[in-house]
Image 1: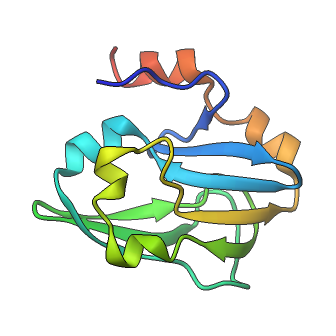
Image 2: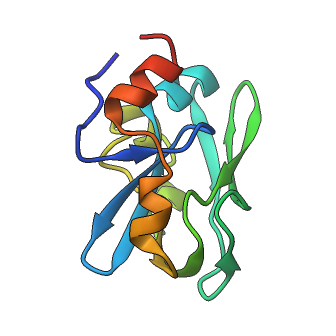
Image 3: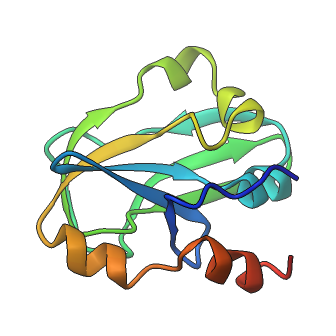
Length: 127
């Protein structure tokens, strides 16, 4: 189990969010990728799509299951990680470096404040 980066915020649905300038970068946690097993496909959200916090934004498929990815913040998708099309296993190998999409958040600070910090997420997953 890798250390949970302190600079990330977490949704209870196991997505991480990180502020990067005026964007929010979104990925899945190490705990999530471990529970899923070998990731074989990632369905990315469409650029330009607007989500409310908690909306299903995409899907991660593994050899065991398919799981929705939820947007941890409200806003518009402005970029997706196309590299995951060819290398979805990056989510297994480097979950905290392999982002899935970036959002121009409508209320970045408010939405981030409502997410769990690293210690809170660690407690939520029983570590």
